Image 1 (cartoon, one colour):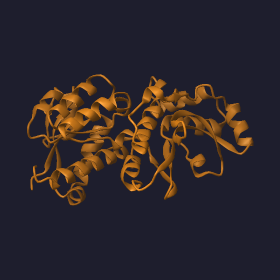
Image 2 (spheres, rainbow, N blue to C red):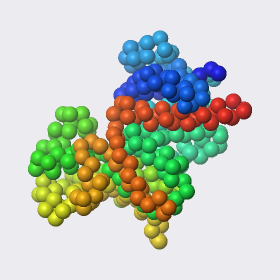
Image 3 (cartoon, helix red, strand yellow):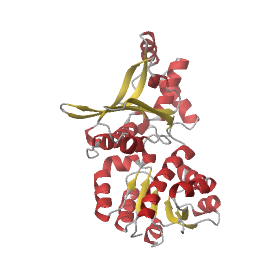
Image 4 (cartoon, rainbow, N blue to C red):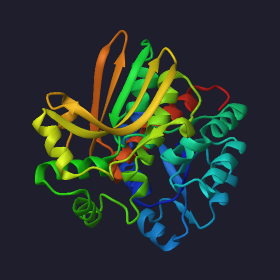
Length: 327
């Protein structure tokens, strides 16, 4: 059986990681998917850099619409980011009958309802494991592994930048501003870190987890969002003296009034496992009625951890595609 053909839109950090891991672990992936998976076309404005990464393994173009228009491409991976052209291209790919894999939590948190409706109308899949907590398979855990459970609540450290800042503030006794500069120098924080430090990125991810856990539409506009910018070294120290750690948590839970969705700094008893998640690591705790409490821990960002999640989605779609007698 011929490999399933994949088009990649954007070959930056995660895109190049996805290409590398797919090449490196080709045999394993073929065995698990039931057939090969090959990125045969890449769209990136910097075609020279893209060619340096893919060599002769894929056709490189500057125009993403050429990838979408190619009838041989079955799956489109969107790794451009943002709400603008990414939204247009995802909707165009779905309209063309392509499955879509994306790591774009901002796009799905804000425009998810429209995108999922478009996918349903065409009978195709939008997969987004890489959009939440990088390499941790939390979407699959909620959607598949815990499918027998009535989920009571989900709480997670789902932004590595803020967790790194809070960890450094605690261990070194530094104030927020000093640690933010350090995080930017190390590449943990963007030049404009607003989405991270104001809690917006975590709220995007919590919105997606909430939708999966409770079967509700994505409703980012209804989330309560508070970041970590007001925290001082003294706050962290006092919390420590009282036996607590401060972490920025994304929380969604079932209540008699409806579904809660919030992101804010939270006091966690220092004996809890999630209180001891340090640096840029992520962790998500899920409470289910049958299974009790489960914890998912790992890298929340980076080229290859995120690529791991992108490829897991490719494998899922390939299995379904291959099992479908119409394909």
